[in-house]
Amino acid sequence: MHVLIFQVETVYLPVLCALVHSLVLICNTGIFVHGSTVYRLDRRPNLLFSRTINQPIDHVVDDQLYVLSRRRLTKIDINTLETTDHLPLPYQFNHMLATRSHIAIIASNEIVLVERKNLSYAASIGLENGDYKPLIKNYRGLSLPENLIFLSRDQGNKSVLLSIDTQSGEIKRKTTVTRIMASYYSKADRLFYFYNADKQILIYDHDLKKKSARNTTITARVINPEPEGFIVADNGHFAILNHDGEILDFQPVPLSSRTSFNILGLVHEGRIVLIDASTMRPVNTSPDAGWLDIISINDPDYCLLLDTLKMFYLASIPELETRLLPFEKPFVSVTELPAAIEPLSWWYVQLGAFASRDNADAAQRLYRDRGLPAMIEETELFRVKIGGFPEKEDALHFIAAAGINGWLVFQPGIKNGEEIVFSLNSENYRFKDGIITKEQP
Image 1 (cartoon, rainbow, N blue to C red):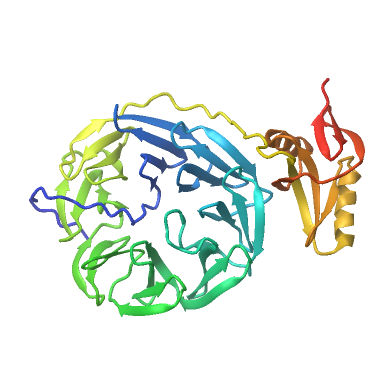
Image 2 (cartoon, rainbow, N blue to C red):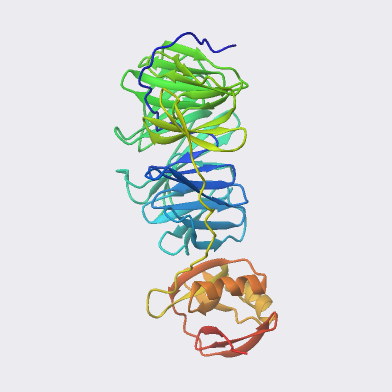
């Protein structure tokens, strides 16, 4: 198939902010991620700042940029692109989402809630084993119950939809549908829109109860409701459907092209092609063929273009007039870790939580045999912990020196009358009155 490119008129091309580019994340502050680098666009002097993460990036942008890498959760300041906090992870997590007060990181059988204010462990919720994905990635500003999050997992040719109460850990609603290929949550009407493998548009309310369904004749991996109906896209096409699911207009695109659903544009054989969302026809094509990618910046009048020399340009829409964006020196990653902010509260490394006291005793002995002052805190479970550390940086240094895995918890101090002196990597520590301090040489 080929894109039908004729002489076109200059018309306004609307930005489809809800449709997500597969490689790029954009937020209203001019932050975007490309490859393994975070960029910040400053529009006043038209400068581009950057910071390379050097690891695969999964991300959520709000007032901070949160990066989930293989064994680490990192918080990056949006204005400076500097690391302001991080949390080591004891094992790998696959996805994440942001609620008003927590970051939820998702593994194959567990959700872990992390406090946004200081990236400390808050709670965990067990799940039946599966590949869970968030149905909503950012809950800030949504009129949804504070404690509910929504996940899905694929199971053969079906998708299981879940709403989970993060306070009680209970599954509030569970429903199974034909496998979902695309989803979108509308803040305006508080509805979920799903596109399934049977080429149906399913509409569900925020209680995950089905409202209606529409049959279509087209596949889709991106869906966005519009006043006239729906805009959908797949690797080989863009299309607009009416409310009954019938195709109003359709634009095939070459499978070899790189598409951007945010602005309904593509890169084909090095040229930028813009598509009008109302007519599904090309509205402009760049005269030169040296482009690699097209990136939305949530501005209806501009986008970014990346050329073969890996330089970024600010481009007007739909004229595609370009301006080179000079790079400032990359920001140096400076870790500034917050100190304990509440009196009588300390940082602890939680090494395990057990229903059985015998199992907790056995785990404690393993660490005690290494000379580490592990203790047991008895709540609803028997929790094996090492601490407390006056500051988070002390706890992070201890974890690295001891080579241990565990969750960092910020909590009121645990009473303990023992006094233990121990060494790690030629550094001497003292555990006294429930507090661990490093001895001065």
